[in-house]
Length: 107
Image (cartoon, rainbow, N blue to C red; front, side, top):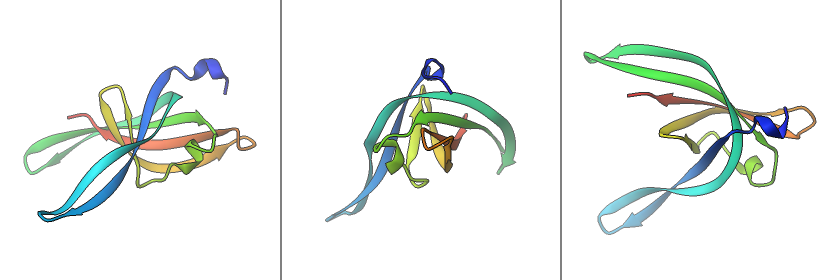
């Protein structure tokens, strides 16, 4: 991986839950914004309750930094107009890079 391949700007967000008099409120707070490469690995379409659901699975590669090493599968990732649910995270090389596998709905 070379730095020149990092051509996508991604933001990773973490869910927080606040208890209010009206009940629990979920909000997503920015954890980190960084440059990444993106490679789509599969797409699919499913029929559920009479509607079509399209998805895309992608792999994002980011530099391994203290901020990116804090990313967890419970977080979510946004790139462009898509919001991805993180499926897995693994180290590449000698801990220089992280690969984030994520899936987004296209509908």
